[in-house]
Length: 50
Length: 498
Image 1 (spheres, rainbow over the protein chains, first blue to last red):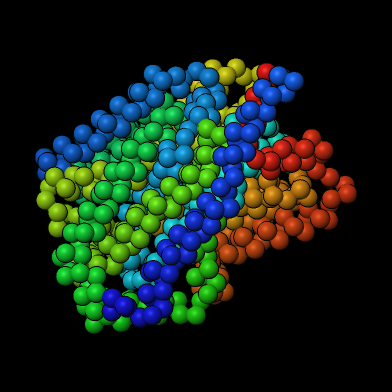
Image 2: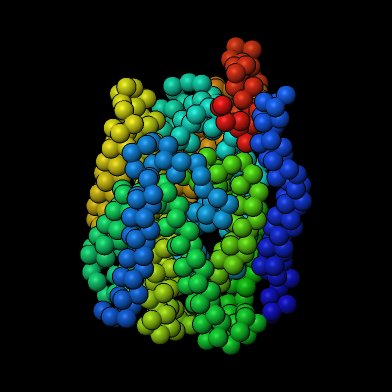
């Protein structure tokens, strides 16, 4: 592709593709972080209320 | 001197200084946490872009371009790791380090190490090593700035250097971390525009990507291989591994980079910042290497390969656009230099002066000491860059290899391994720095086929594991720190005291 040897093509396009997948995986695995943040902020007020 | 180029450069400097003044008025001065960490209120986008623009130094426009020009596609091994550096940093240590640094009340990445691995020796060794290495790293940025400005503006090297150094010192001095973070944000945008513009112009000049590769292969087939000119690196997987690791996991050992985690608004910031970092890197990182490769066709006879990108810009772009590209190059240099200066000043003041010389120093005095250090390092760096400048590539690879090797296990284990103790961390820092340093000093890369980063990492990681385990009974990790680690592992921010 693009007149490059296969190994060079993999280097130029394979690594960026890997990092995109890594980032999407990170976002997927951490999708509950925001919920935890909200729960954490709400918890003291609930304790105070009780 | 080209007036149009100068006008754009001056405009760029005015905006950067304006942001510095704005940050100062926003209240960065006075309080130490505000000065060193921007009051821990930096959001995900600014965190990501200050992380990336700090990591991408003048190396990207000088060293990366030169690597592409001299070694062809081999240089892309460095880019391959670099693209993931931000998200690896954020996903592995970002959230936990933000939280643990707040729980321990740490304001600098070296103080953080001492709080996690309680020992004055850790602070002294890590602080001394960091001041020396970051000071050298600043030097590389000054050289890059001086070279670039001298070439494009026609000013003598000494004068160009003085202008670049003076502006960096001024806004770092004024606004502290907040000024650095917000100017980095602006500069990262300028860097993207500049590098993509010059990449587009270079591709148009050579008739497109595929045509360029065909032409380069005719000139020298090994340049389109993954093994460098004349297949000089063929089969040297130890060197390849080092090239990939140095700017991917290596970032996690750079104190001036991991301090970005400590300044985040909350632990959650790490998530979005990681995604923004990848997006920015995909656009920015490969471009300087590829422009360097295309320069083989555009300018086959360059006396100094480190000036390949500057020369391509001058040859292909109209003066106004060259001014923007030049501003982008200065942005890459300045966004790293300011962070390095601030970190070096902070570490010298907080981790060395306050810790070992004047423990009762007031916060006001600490800020003053930090600012004086910024001035002193800037002055010394200017003189060295003026009198005997080494190449930017040499300095950056040297410093980043030693930093990454020395501190990677210490920062990662600080939040992930409950058995990592003080003797383990101290030995790891010393072993990683020494092996990486000696490896480069004796030129062992060629003889062993192992990159200094890999050799240093092997030494520091092995030392951390074996020494920590061997000394576990005699030097257990204090219960208070284990409790803080448990809390740092939990999701959510640190509960504010009521």
